[in-house]
Image (cartoon, rainbow, N blue to C red):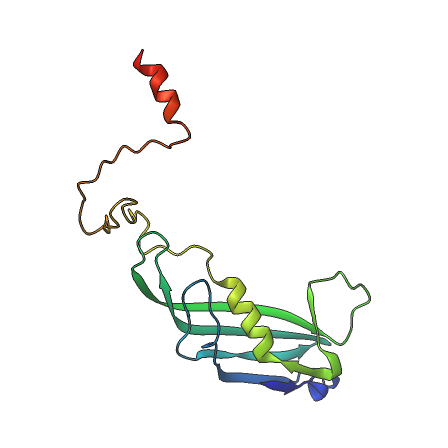
Amino acid sequence: MMIDLKQLFEIVGESIDIDCCLSLSEVKLGMTNPFTEPVHLSGKITNRAGIVTLNYTASAAAHHVCDRCLAPINTPVVFGFEHILVKQVNDDSNDDFIVVPNLVLDLDELASSDIILELPSKVLCKEDCKGLCPTCGVNLNEQSCNCTQKRIDPRLEILSKLLEN
């Protein structure tokens, strides 16, 4: 969604309401596609005393896979974002502002970046998830297995012979 901000930058006190949906169905993180349904964006862009700010929330249902046991996880997520929009910056290394070239904001691109960066890098079905057995692959949250639990790293196996003497 492209938003023309020319009038907003010129008139102090002006505001634009945001209420739209963003499709992130093509985004893949690891082996999963976290957003199969559209992400709802709602918020406002305002000019207060010549400072243009963008405040919005993104809400959706996120679909992940547990990183330990591979169980599917569906959770609602709500993220809040705030940005200061400027026409130009004097210092190229300043990441505090969003530069709006030609006074047109590409909200889809900005929101996509914000949402993807906000997603967790590791997802667990529960805090004490036991994961899968490395030998037989049984989900240890659901049942226990009969595999030998004491596995020795083959690189360190020679050291166990020292303890036998």
